Amino acid sequence: MWMSTFARFALPALQRSTSAMACQALRACHRPGQAAGLLSSCLKSMQLRGHQTLGSASLPVARQSVRHVRALDEDRLMEVEWEDGGHSLYPFTWLRDNCQCPLCTLQSAQARKLLMSDLDIHTGVDVVEVTNDNKVSIVWPDQHTSVFDAEWLKKRCFSPAARQAMQEELFLNERYYWDSKLRIPTADYQEVLHDDKAALAWLLALRRVGIVYLRGAPAEQGHVARLAERIGYLRLTFYGHTWQVQDKYMANNVAYTSGRLSLHTDYPALHFAPGVQFLHCINQAVEGGESEVVDGFHMAEQLQREDPEAFRTLTSLPVDFTDTGTDYCDFMLQSKKCIIDVDAEGRVARINYNNATRDSVLDLPLHQVQPFYRSLKAFVDIMNRPENVVTYSMEPGDIVTFDNWRLLHGRRSYISRPDRLRHLEGAYLDWDEVMSRLRILRNSVHEDM
Ligand SMILES: [Zn+2]
Image (cartoon, rainbow, N blue to C red):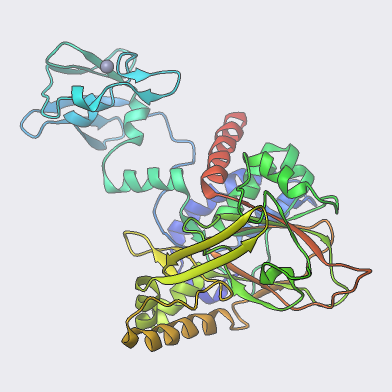
């Protein structure tokens, strides 16, 4: 059990439904003794935390049939009664806005042609009925006709449960929280490149757990870029398309030394920090250089529980970050970020913390300076607890892939020897591109099943 400490918080029903969802693709690629199978068995024993919903919408849904449909003219809603007894309500305005006919929708782009200026947001309906092939047909007052597929409607039901399920299918925001007992999910590099099921399992685990280890890449440059091509494209930054983590003379970044790197996220000096990071070990140091990671979302949750005042401070006070130098080209970055970003519902969405690039400019009133330091210290103390830190040592050919919006990573100092230079190659991607590939793989793998 990876997260026995937190097992008592897990909702058994939730875990059943969501584990089934998360592991469905993983089971499909289970072959005893192979890396994807290891990934699968790792995930099955984990507890879901964080953005909890009841959604299991990526499981294939049973075909939906409409029993009855009627217009509630006074409320300007269409009511659908489903064969399973459930009901859904759809506003007339939304239905007219989302007419799927070729006049209103560009089929080749699945994009809306209907202009907002042509949408009557006070429209009524003339006729609503169920067609012979179990679709819902609406004739509007101007005699324009819309036909809606039952499953399409069902997925877009406005009930809280249906909306939650749809959002979970789209964004996979449920996360497995972990601590030092994590066995990092592991997959085979070549399998991920060439097998869609293995690639899907990799990206699902990257989303849910936040870190996946890939083994078996050649110990030479170019493979983080190859892996990024598997998804879409990588994220160019001032450190280049890919970047070489080595002990460098006159280093333009603390990472390019042999010193210890405390737990950090990469690039908070960018307002839009890279979402995903790949690090490929090409050569390891003779001594030292072990990697450390913590689950930042889990750490933020611990801080919120143990020290709510510090949590409030770190989620509300913007801090300045800076990065200046020359690499891909010359740069002089400034940003303002809270150490912990929360979304509109107050859920932790991103960690922004790198002590090396935290600016000496601190745009806070005097009385907030000491509370800020106290709060940051409390957060860092939690993430440095041995029970929270996972330590591993990369071997040549290993690639670690992780969520840079969630994990904090560091490395121990190492002995730099000219005949055995430690060398990692890194690359960034963004979550939009990774999630795009994940959705496409999920569709294609499910079609094959
Ligand atoms: Zn239309």
